[in-house]
Amino acid sequence: MLAPMTTSERAGREVGSSDVVRRLRGGTDMLTSAALRRLDAELDWYRQLAAEDRSWIGLVAQAGIAAFITWYEEPQAGTYNAQEIFRAAPPELTRSISLQHTLQLVRIVVEVVEDNAVQLAEPGQQRDLRDAVLLYSREVAFSAAEVYARAAETRGAWDARLEALVVDSLVRGGDESLRARISALGWSGRGGTLVVVGQAPAEMDERRTADLRRACRRAAQDALVGIQGDRVVVVLGGDGDLRAAAASLLPRFGPGPVVLGPEVREVGDAGRSARAALAGLIAVHAWPGAPRPVPADELLPERMLNGDPLARRTLVEELYRPLVAAGGPLVQTLEEYLAQGRSLEGAARALYVHPNTVRYRLRRIGQVVGWDPTDAREGFVLQVALAVGRLAQSGSRHSGLL
Image (cartoon, rainbow, N blue to C red; front, side):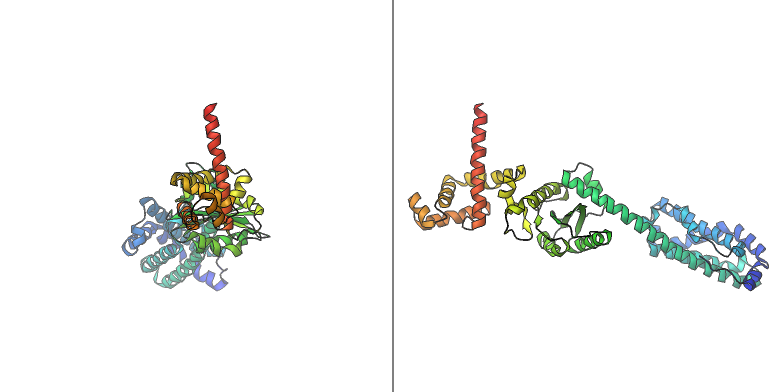
């Protein structure tokens, strides 16, 4: 807001100002055209704008000149809301041009008015006109900064709500419109996608949520954050090591387990990662020694026992069936090894083979499915996979008889 003028300033302004105002009003179109020509000649970003955006900028420039004339004509008012200038253009214009570009626009318009002050003012009024232009341009610059700050705040609040809806949609399975919503949030779509879930810290207010979002975007190329009650759901994407990125965010979660969903190829498949991670967060309490963070696939037995159909399907399709397809000796060796209390010698005696043969087959199992039977935890996962696979196979046979 402009400061009130002193009595001497007001008196000096009023003398002969009517002629200057009349000339300014008559020259508004000329000043606007001159400003737009300068913009086109000097600023690359202006030439690259769409025709609609350039027309909006022309209206802003014209509104700025008209607002200055109104203030110059009635200085006794003492103040003027320069933000009125930016109401000539839609709020979406702040997405097309930056604050820096807007200040360049203000500078060029001011220079155009100054350059034409000799033609528009009497000799005794030229300096006064220049001073008034400089004073008013300062107010316009401050108003522009306020407009952009308010637009950024509004856009930030809207983006946060949209982000929460997108994450909730991912968890629920999403639909065809989900990709467009994610793109609107700036998701680049490069690399894979990983979902991380855990407990929210105490007193998760807006400031802490904003801090979490900034930390996630520093950790990965793409990130989405959703706060669902006392639970935090983070979606990470990019070409880098997403598990390492998730591990770096552990201090941002509250106490308790943090579960990583399986990495998927693209954000459109993130629902599968999210469902696995959320199921793991529920089932992880059955494994007191679970690491933090723990991959959801390492919780397959607990998830299956808790009724997670995705875990059951994973055990059958990714563990049991590859073992069966690799040949009967591998399944037989694994079953005997587990039945003999994970004893190489006991399994060898039961199978009538050398212990080195058992050892080789166990290594082969690890190569086929990626789980090591000699590790206590991974052997337990394989044991559950065998049981679930046998039940699935038996169920298929019985369903065929019905």
